[in-house]
Image 1: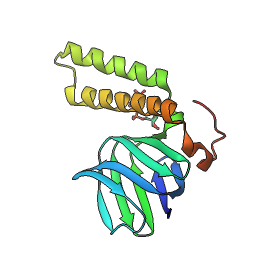
Image 2: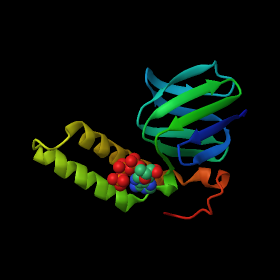
Image 3: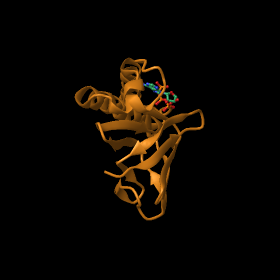
Length: 151
Ligand code: ATP
Protein backbone atom coordinates (compact mmCIF):
# COMPACT_ATOMS: atom_id res chain seq x y z
CA UNK A 1 0.00 0.00 0.00
CA UNK A 2 1.28 3.48 -0.82
CA UNK A 3 2.32 5.92 1.89
CA UNK A 4 2.64 9.67 2.40
CA UNK A 5 4.99 11.56 4.76
CA UNK A 6 3.23 12.91 7.87
CA UNK A 7 4.68 15.51 10.21
CA UNK A 8 3.05 16.52 13.49
CA UNK A 9 4.71 19.65 14.85
CA UNK A 10 4.18 21.77 17.98
CA UNK A 11 5.97 25.00 18.93
CA UNK A 12 8.28 22.85 21.12
CA UNK A 13 9.11 19.81 19.01
CA UNK A 14 8.50 17.51 16.07
CA UNK A 15 6.14 15.00 17.66
CA UNK A 16 6.01 12.63 14.70
CA UNK A 17 7.64 12.38 11.31
CA UNK A 18 7.18 9.29 9.19
CA UNK A 19 5.50 7.63 6.22
CA UNK A 20 1.89 6.62 6.82
CA UNK A 21 -0.90 4.95 4.87
CA UNK A 22 -3.78 7.05 6.18
CA UNK A 23 -4.57 9.85 8.64
CA UNK A 24 -8.03 10.34 10.17
CA UNK A 25 -8.99 13.36 12.24
CA UNK A 26 -11.72 15.84 13.06
CA UNK A 27 -11.29 18.89 10.90
CA UNK A 28 -13.09 22.21 11.31
CA UNK A 29 -15.63 21.15 8.68
CA UNK A 30 -16.03 17.52 9.71
CA UNK A 31 -14.26 14.18 9.85
CA UNK A 32 -11.46 13.64 7.37
CA UNK A 33 -9.70 10.52 6.15
CA UNK A 34 -6.59 11.39 4.17
CA UNK A 35 -4.80 8.98 1.86
CA UNK A 36 -1.66 9.52 -0.23
CA UNK A 37 -2.17 11.85 -3.22
CA UNK A 38 -5.07 13.64 -1.56
CA UNK A 39 -6.10 16.96 -3.12
CA UNK A 40 -4.52 20.05 -1.49
CA UNK A 41 -6.39 21.22 1.60
CA UNK A 42 -5.90 23.56 4.55
CA UNK A 43 -8.24 23.42 7.52
CA UNK A 44 -8.36 23.61 11.29
CA UNK A 45 -8.00 20.53 13.48
CA UNK A 46 -10.37 20.07 16.40
CA UNK A 47 -9.01 18.92 19.75
CA UNK A 48 -8.99 15.14 19.85
CA UNK A 49 -7.27 12.06 18.50
CA UNK A 50 -5.52 11.75 15.18
CA UNK A 51 -5.65 8.14 13.98
CA UNK A 52 -2.61 7.11 12.02
CA UNK A 53 -2.47 3.93 9.95
CA UNK A 54 0.90 2.40 9.15
CA UNK A 55 1.88 -1.00 7.76
CA UNK A 56 2.03 -2.48 11.29
CA UNK A 57 -1.42 -1.28 12.34
CA UNK A 58 -3.06 1.80 13.85
CA UNK A 59 -2.00 4.24 16.56
CA UNK A 60 -3.22 7.54 17.97
CA UNK A 61 -1.74 10.99 18.45
CA UNK A 62 -3.50 13.35 20.84
CA UNK A 63 -3.68 16.96 19.63
CA UNK A 64 -5.11 19.95 21.47
CA UNK A 65 -6.17 21.58 18.20
CA UNK A 66 -4.35 23.34 15.39
CA UNK A 67 -4.06 23.33 11.63
CA UNK A 68 -3.81 20.74 8.90
CA UNK A 69 -2.10 21.20 5.55
CA UNK A 70 -2.53 18.45 2.98
CA UNK A 71 -0.54 18.31 -0.23
CA UNK A 72 -0.57 15.32 -2.59
CA UNK A 73 2.96 14.49 -1.40
CA UNK A 74 2.86 15.36 2.33
CA UNK A 75 0.61 15.98 5.31
CA UNK A 76 1.46 18.47 8.06
CA UNK A 77 -0.35 18.99 11.35
CA UNK A 78 0.60 22.07 13.38
CA UNK A 79 -0.75 21.66 16.90
CA UNK A 80 -0.65 23.74 20.07
CA UNK A 81 0.32 20.57 21.94
CA UNK A 82 0.47 16.91 20.91
CA UNK A 83 1.54 13.61 22.39
CA UNK A 84 2.06 10.16 20.95
CA UNK A 85 -0.14 7.62 22.68
CA UNK A 86 2.62 6.15 24.88
CA UNK A 87 3.97 9.59 25.85
CA UNK A 88 0.78 10.38 27.75
CA UNK A 89 1.18 10.52 31.51
CA UNK A 90 -2.09 8.87 32.59
CA UNK A 91 -1.87 10.01 36.23
CA UNK A 92 -1.27 13.59 35.16
CA UNK A 93 -4.27 13.46 32.82
CA UNK A 94 -6.37 11.93 35.60
CA UNK A 95 -5.37 14.77 37.96
CA UNK A 96 -6.16 17.37 35.27
CA UNK A 97 -9.56 15.73 34.77
CA UNK A 98 -10.35 15.83 38.49
CA UNK A 99 -9.25 19.48 38.76
CA UNK A 100 -11.46 20.46 35.83
CA UNK A 101 -14.43 18.49 37.19
CA UNK A 102 -14.04 20.13 40.61
CA UNK A 103 -13.98 23.60 39.01
CA UNK A 104 -17.04 22.82 36.92
CA UNK A 105 -18.96 21.50 39.92
CA UNK A 106 -18.27 24.75 41.86
CA UNK A 107 -19.39 27.02 39.02
CA UNK A 108 -18.54 30.02 41.19
CA UNK A 109 -18.11 33.49 39.76
CA UNK A 110 -14.36 33.07 39.55
CA UNK A 111 -14.59 29.85 37.53
CA UNK A 112 -13.89 30.23 33.84
CA UNK A 113 -16.31 27.57 32.61
CA UNK A 114 -15.12 27.46 29.00
CA UNK A 115 -11.53 27.07 30.15
CA UNK A 116 -12.42 24.30 32.59
CA UNK A 117 -14.47 22.52 29.93
CA UNK A 118 -11.56 22.69 27.48
CA UNK A 119 -9.19 21.33 30.14
CA UNK A 120 -11.63 18.51 30.90
CA UNK A 121 -11.86 17.66 27.21
CA UNK A 122 -8.06 17.58 26.84
CA UNK A 123 -7.73 15.31 29.87
CA UNK A 124 -10.46 12.95 28.65
CA UNK A 125 -8.96 12.81 25.17
CA UNK A 126 -5.54 12.00 26.65
CA UNK A 127 -7.02 9.22 28.75
CA UNK A 128 -8.83 7.85 25.71
CA UNK A 129 -5.62 7.88 23.61
CA UNK A 130 -3.71 6.09 26.37
CA UNK A 131 -6.46 3.46 26.71
CA UNK A 132 -6.54 2.89 22.94
CA UNK A 133 -2.76 2.48 22.94
CA UNK A 134 -3.10 -0.28 25.51
CA UNK A 135 -5.70 -1.97 23.35
CA UNK A 136 -3.92 -1.62 19.99
CA UNK A 137 -0.27 -1.45 21.02
CA UNK A 138 1.86 1.59 20.22
CA UNK A 139 2.81 0.80 16.66
CA UNK A 140 4.21 4.28 15.96
CA UNK A 141 6.99 3.62 18.49
CA UNK A 142 9.25 2.16 15.86
CA UNK A 143 8.94 5.36 13.78
CA UNK A 144 10.04 7.65 16.60
CA UNK A 145 13.47 7.93 18.11
CA UNK A 146 12.57 8.97 21.66
CA UNK A 147 14.24 6.05 23.36
CA UNK A 148 10.90 4.27 23.60
CA UNK A 149 10.55 5.46 27.19
CA UNK A 150 7.17 5.18 28.89
CA UNK A 151 6.34 8.51 30.49
P1 ATP B 1 -1.94 19.96 32.80
O1 ATP B 1 -2.96 20.72 33.62
O2 ATP B 1 -1.67 18.60 33.34
O3 ATP B 1 -0.69 20.78 32.51
P2 ATP B 1 -3.01 20.76 30.25
O4 ATP B 1 -4.14 20.16 29.46
O5 ATP B 1 -3.25 22.11 30.82
O6 ATP B 1 -2.63 19.70 31.38
P3 ATP B 1 -1.52 21.49 27.94
O7 ATP B 1 -1.54 22.98 28.11
O8 ATP B 1 -2.47 20.89 26.95
O9 ATP B 1 -1.70 20.78 29.37
O10 ATP B 1 -0.04 20.99 27.55
C1 ATP B 1 1.14 21.57 28.14
C2 ATP B 1 2.31 20.65 27.80
O11 ATP B 1 2.25 19.48 28.62
C3 ATP B 1 2.33 20.15 26.37
O12 ATP B 1 3.67 20.01 25.97
C4 ATP B 1 1.66 18.79 26.45
O13 ATP B 1 2.10 17.94 25.40
C5 ATP B 1 2.12 18.31 27.83
N1 ATP B 1 1.14 17.46 28.52
C6 ATP B 1 0.00 17.85 29.12
N2 ATP B 1 -0.62 16.82 29.73
C7 ATP B 1 0.14 15.74 29.49
C8 ATP B 1 0.03 14.35 29.84
N3 ATP B 1 -0.99 13.87 30.56
N4 ATP B 1 1.01 13.51 29.44
C9 ATP B 1 2.05 13.97 28.72
N5 ATP B 1 2.21 15.25 28.35
C10 ATP B 1 1.28 16.14 28.73
